[in-house]
Structure formats: structure tokens, C-alpha cells
Image (cartoon, rainbow over all chains, first blue to last red; front, side, top):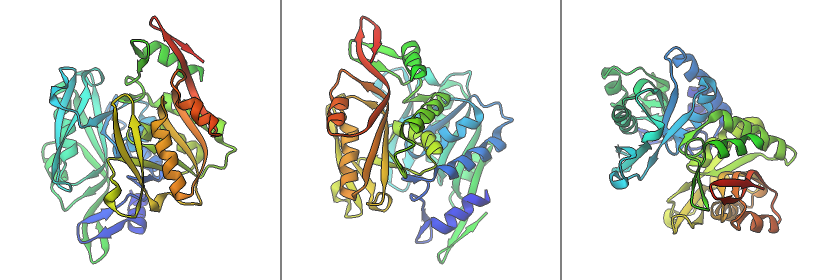
Length: 189
Length: 189
């Protein structure tokens, strides 16, 4: 999506050769009109995939998922962080390893809100190593829900998550793919 | 808002005499069409208050704030949890005491995204003792931002947060106020 690439180029803050901070429009302050255009684009990409639910993870995925869900006319379910396996049998849990923070987080979704009838679109803000998406896929598998698609705002093409998920056969669409960051310039894929 | 009261009555899960779980439509699974109606209603209530930014707190406030922000055509900023005072001078911090969990959480907003030019609407899903809203007000005060209004989906009228904030002079509007829970029946105010 050209608009998103433009906003990343104009407003993103490059740190070194592998980090672009986008907390001025995507994951701290949120440009809601940009989310709206992203939501429209996700709908264009996945409208024929018979989605009945959008699944994301707190916190920054929630706004993107809710705005997109308006186009699909489906509910959103977000995985909560800090859920522990010992909370009982009413929650599906997964584990997300963050390379940025170097730590594992437990995530969970109530069994009431994800079932074998669900055909889900996973939405998230960022894809790098794919830890969050893989955690959500693991939860979907436990529920028997079908992962019909994965929609990402910004994929870091130089990190392996996107390649791995596509090789696993998932329909993964990223609105902007950063292929490299070179001397303060972002090269999109 | 009659629609929200109806949904709370029909789908909310009453526990004892003071808890209504709404995680089937508001804070785990999210009924986005209900958020949309809530967003319209917040706009009707606050459209003349010259709002230029909506401020909320992760996680469940984010979806509500983003959908509402579309009507106001303003950005959203959400306070992050688990921010510590020692992160440096670029973040305003506040403290939220949760009576439910019996613990304090540090919250923070980057100085870049809240300034003395901002006229904010604080939005959140629930108001009971008002801890989260008071934490956000404390942050707004540090930034010199003006709190033009507070919009809440569900207020527990039998807990003191709403009364205190109104007595402090804030324009606080709640889309549904639960006055009491009596023998499995919810009485709205």
C-alpha cells in the first residue's frame, strides 16, 4: 500500500540498520485515518476468504483489527498477554518469543471465543520473526479454527517470519514490506 | 445508550452483586458494530468540545478509542502499562490502582504525543473506582493538556469513581450506568 510506505518513509524513525520506530502513527499514537485505509486494503485482499472473525494480540493490534473488522462486519478477538497455563481449562494458551525484548510471553484466548467453526484472519501491526503470529496460529490449532489469512501492516522482509509463514502455506499479505534499511533510507519490497 | 444497556442485559454475565463480565462483546471478544454505535454516541456527546486527540489506556480501551476517533477525525494515543519512572525524561508516567486486582500498575505516554496544545477526550471501557482515568488525568496535567471530556462505555454507579470525577468538574459521560445488581438483574441509572 503506497500510502503506508509513504508514511513510514516520512514519519518513521530509523535506528541503525534494522529498526524503524513507528510509534508516532501506529503503535503508541495512532493515525486512525491511516488505519481506515489499511482496513479497506485488508478487506480488498481477504474479502473472498469467508472470514468470520478477526484475531489479534494486545495491545497495538487491537486498533488495527477493530477498524478493519468494520469492513468485514465480523467480531474481533484479541489474545491477552501474561496468561498462564495454570489458569484452568477454559483458555487456550500460546507462547510468544520476542527477539527485541529477549523474553517469552504467555498469551491466551478464552475457549468461548474461538471454536472449530471459526475461519479467522490474523491481523497484527508488525511481522519480523513471526513470534506473535505463530503463537496465535498455535492457539487457533488448539481451537480447531481455520486460519484463512494473515494481514500485517509492516513486514520486515529481511527477517525470517514472513518467508517461514508463506512456506507453511499461509496466505500472508503485508501492506508494506521493508526489504532493507540502508544509510537512513528504507527500501521497500 | 439503550442499545448498550440491552446488550449488557442480554449477554453480560453477572457474578455476585457487583461484577458484570462483558468479555463476550467488549473486552476480549469485541462486537465492532456495537463499538461503532458507541463511537457515534461519543461524537454526539463531545462534538462541540473542540477535541483534537483521544487518549486511552491499553488494552481494551484501544478498540473503542480507535473506532470513536473516526467520527472525530483525530488521532488516538494510548498509555502503555508497565512503564517505569526510571525510563528517562521522555515519558510522562502515572499510577493506576486496580481494586479488582489489588495492585498498582505504572502507565506512561511519550512526551512527543501529548503536549500543552492538546485538548483531549479520555475514553475507556469501564469506570468503577476511576483509577485508570485518574492516572490518565495525572499524565495530562504533566503535559499541560486540557481534559475536555471523559467518555466511558460502562460506569458502575455504585462505585465512587464517577461521582468523584464529576465533583472534580470533569464532563463525564457514560453510555450505560449500572446502578445496582439485584438478584441477577441489572438496574441501570
